[in-house]
Structure formats: C-alpha cells, structure tokens
Image 1 (cartoon, rainbow, N blue to C red):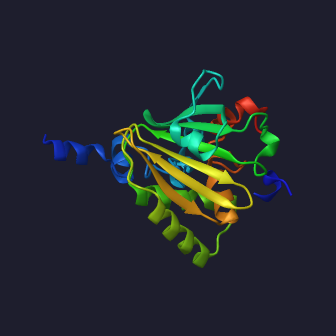
Image 2 (image 1 turned 60 degrees about the horizontal axis):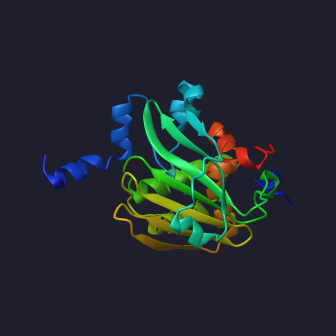
Length: 236
C-alpha cells in the first residue's frame, strides 16, 4: 500500500530571544501558537482557529530552487550518505520567518517513493523554540491525518518531548525517516557541534510525524509542493 493511500544582560537577551509560542502569538497579533519540526516539527504550523479566520494565511511559504547547489549538512550526510537535495522552502507566518525546510533523498528518488524509501527532512530554525512546544505542536498537526487514540497520543507526546531539545536561531534538526521501521534524529547546534538525539522504532509515529510536512493532509501544502519540487512534485 502506498504512502498516500495510508495516510539587557546576556542572560536576559538569551531568555528574550527564546520565544515561546505564546509570545510569538502576541507579537504576531494573529497567531495563537507556533512551532514544530515538527519536524523535524518541528515544526511550526498555523493553529486551527487562525486557519478558520483566514485560511490563506496558513500556507505562507517561499519556494527556493531545488538545484541551488546547497550541500547536505554533516548531519544529513551521517543519517543518509549520498543523499541529494530534493526541494526546499522557507516557512513564514504573518511576517515571521520560522524555518528553512530541506528535503534530501537518495539519487533517483521520486515523489512516488514517499513512504517507500528513506529520506531526510532538515529544519533550520530562524528563531528559538522549546522542545516541549515542538513536541506538542507536532502531535496537534499529526491529528490532521486522522484520529489518534488518547493513550497512544500520550505515549507519542512523551516520546517526542524526551527527544526534541530546545533549539536556537540558526540551529538545525535533521530527521531520517525509515519507512516501515521508524526515525532517527540529529541536532546541529549553533557552536558547530552535532549531537545524535536518537529516535524511535515506531513506523506509525514516523509516518504521522513526517506527514506533518509531506502528507496531502499537511496544513502547509505550498511547502509540501516546494519540498517535493525536485522529485516530480506532489503525487496527490
């Protein structure tokens, strides 16, 4: 079955820079939450009540050429050796640039391979987010693909909360999706170091998580199109 058929002082300055989703909502004036990585959020997506007010604002994305010579980061190369850039975009909400998203896959990978062959999604954050907010927003976005049992949702939230770190502007989270197996993640920090975060062996959670950006049910279809632009574009 195919994927698409399934699914001040330095301390004060640092604190001020690490905006919570609530603070961003106040600054933006129209949002009630931001985040995810979901990605990899990762994951910044427009909440449901903001979508209800103005659906067109839920997908403000600037596509970038897939073949711009952007070399894979060390994290991407470690997760999936030989991977090539498929597509990329920058996600913005109400004037706030949230992150760059880049999709990498093996040579010859096509959109029809989604959910069948490994890929890496890397998010480069343009502002700070707390790991707990990333995990929570990820769960909310995963519900778009269908209901999740309450006990399973609590288990997934716990798993993601323990996995994702607080990230700062310029830092990146890269996630390897292994269809039928699970996911693995690495964190590229601002000081140039790289940390293996681990992952999970849960095919259903992995599919729902990467579906935040790549499934037809995504809240950001323009970003999905940009990510898949170098692989023949979305198949549905």
